[in-house]
Length: 315
Image 1 (cartoon, rainbow, N blue to C red):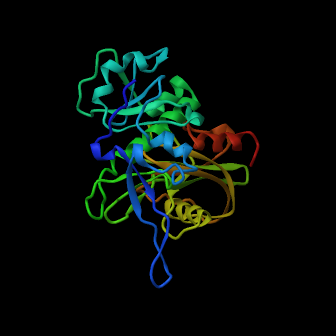
Image 2: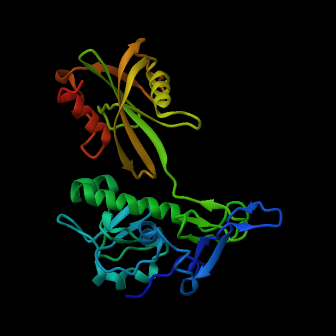
């Protein structure tokens, strides 16, 4: 199978961090970003990067493909779910721009981006990532989510934001590096907290104006610079519904590729105050018992796990 080219021919080389060099006054100079053609890099300098190498190198592996057009996954059939395979490569291979391959821990899928304004071959249809959970299960959702996040990062780092030079891959540092000014770009993660707050035998649920009609969920919000996760929990709850919480306890996490969040789940208990929705992010909020539960999020999300954990008696 042919190697799929990167967006730019200049991407057909690998960047590695050069070893720190002594200068005349004995002070070590910061490592330089050095670019080498694939056939010329030193194996001693490229090490401990198997995981990220498989994510960022061009696709050469056979198997099922994870193909995206804009934010949607391309499939041959939804029911049953059928992904594009190597036998279909004549339909899309030469049209892909950003490409890569997932590690074995995420299924080893090759992935690529189909032109956003391109007409799809008639054998393909589109499916959203949220719908994919229902159609293909959690593992496929995680694989597609990982591919989407890497694709989004890769297509947005073609050029250095400082000087405009074409960026190149850095195997050692699992990043893109600028050979001109040494700027480094790592995959983006946006941490966000999500928390189940209880008051005696009731659970706090709230409604965003962006939710489907009738749906409520636990509260969530992005971590701001300089905050601890616990501080974020306390701030978000107070800002959105006007109460203070205590006993903030870690629950679990979930990667959330919309587009590159990491959801960090917590539980907490009401400390003081009365519910006062902010009227912007939250239009309604209330304390619910198991008997008065409204519509809640689907099983795809950690919000549902937090709610089900409370319903199971872990209050």
